[in-house]
Length: 306
Image 1: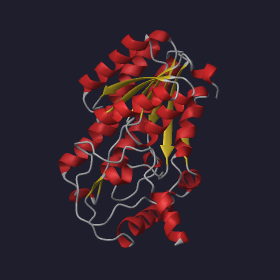
Image 2: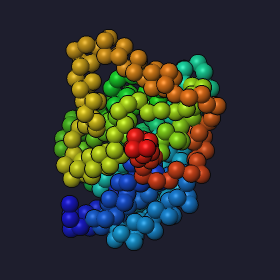
Image 3: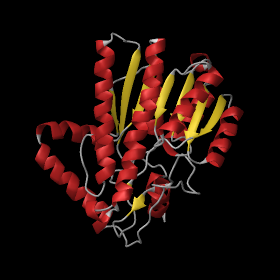
Image 4: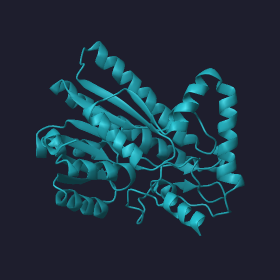
């Protein structure tokens, strides 16, 4: 992808302060895009905007809590008033509260839904209205492989990701009925990838947070999103095991669900050391963990070498 391909492209990225969002923003800056950066952490956004500009892109940081409709409205207005229009909108902001369903405080469950699902609905509403007016544009919503197959201890997170998969399907149907073939809606469904989410999420399991294995390189998802900007597709799962499980679940739903439950329980409970409860970033952003990578794969390799 060359700079000429992206020189006039305006992209809104929510959840830009770390993980996939930050990684995509930096990749877009490298190819000269104009990036509108949204997240709750104002200082992290300002630092990212400087880094994007140093790489050759234009960047507009807009502190945003996606669960608040008024914040997302201001985000859309800032993007359009600054750059004239939006070509791509990426909804990546997300939180999680891990634990047995009844052990997670109800307020935490509800906030996960507000951030992950209502936040995506907020962003998608403004994006699709704008794209309908222009008769073109690409909406990319980051869901999860857990939006296709459930896993224990991820109750409200799974519900939110199933919801994202569902609303994206509705949007594609409505756009097809309106014959708006140049307005695209893409769903990205990653397996576990090495971002700071596992250090940020709320945890009520009584054990240290562990990803459901295998844990993939976070850059797989970043590259996939960059490809979708140029060549949109309806749905993609990132992570080979996820693709296999989705196919298998279509034929053998109950056995695959039982296997998913056993593997998740083994990783999150049986093999994980005890830990105290924490609320994580469900209600307030964390002061640490503003990188693209969570560093878990790197630490694991060091342990193996030692």
